[in-house]
Image (tube, rainbow, N blue to C red; front, top):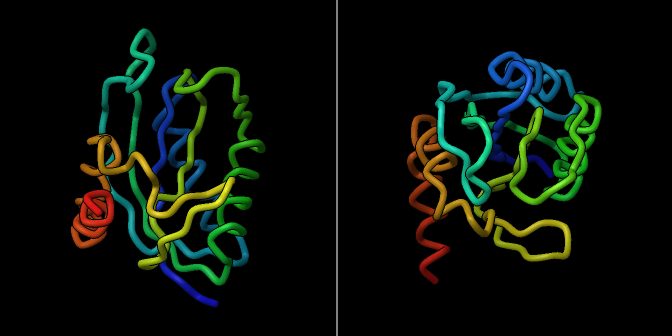
Length: 146
């Protein structure tokens, strides 16, 4: 299986812009993933838990031979390699990589829901994604509306 996926990346502790660039390099270095599009990096206020530094956010498109769940495992592995520790929901982080969409796959499992269930509510996801794939933003919103 080969597909196109859309990822959202964010960071707000350490050197966020450098960490985003490092994450992009690591994702592109994966044998089964090729980066095909990148948005600019946007500075955004924290969402959910607001008493923390602003985030640097971006989106990227990848071509991959991995299944959606295998892609999730790959990006979670990159988060771990980069020092991501999950202490609190919506808390500060050195890197966050979310799978937002994979082709037009709709799925719901314990580990992954596609499209991402909150993407349509989050400008920090939609704005950078809209730079590189406005059609994916439209699809994510359409699915969210039922």
